Length: 178
Image 1 (tube, one colour):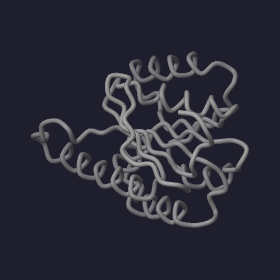
Image 2 (cartoon, rainbow, N blue to C red):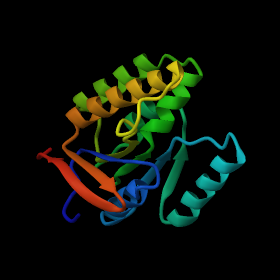
Image 3 (cartoon, rainbow, N blue to C red):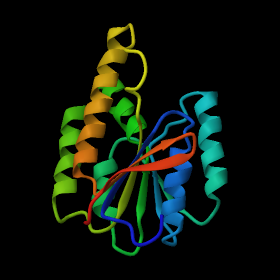
Image 4 (tube, rainbow, N blue to C red):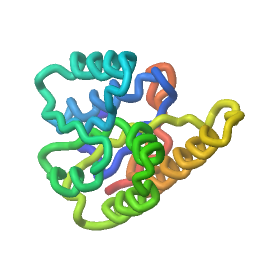
């Protein structure tokens, strides 16, 4: 995608769909960006995934690792000359929900920020589209599925641009001026 980024972009996709790499590419096309990473290395597999993302990014990105205070970082760091990539909303939400950290309050803070003039520069959010498969059999997974779907709908509604990445191929679902 060429041209300036809109204020809010949402990049959705399934696991290993290429959504993070696509989001990185659209920010790299603008110059240097800030990478707001929400993942935590709670096991060896996640540590390896984080290392792979770090290696792919190289030294051109400034990185802030924050699994909870995403809204505060966005409010503090957003500026017109440096887009921010939030990767990803799914891990942020899971951290909030599974650590009993008042997820609804944090989501409302995010909504308020996206609706205000306090967001001073472009942000690209990455999120998993997890609602395309079978409804999980256990209650905790269903609660997470519902919460993730609601969060994605909220951000998509407020976003200027929404892109679905499938098998590495981006499809623009929404494209409105900022």
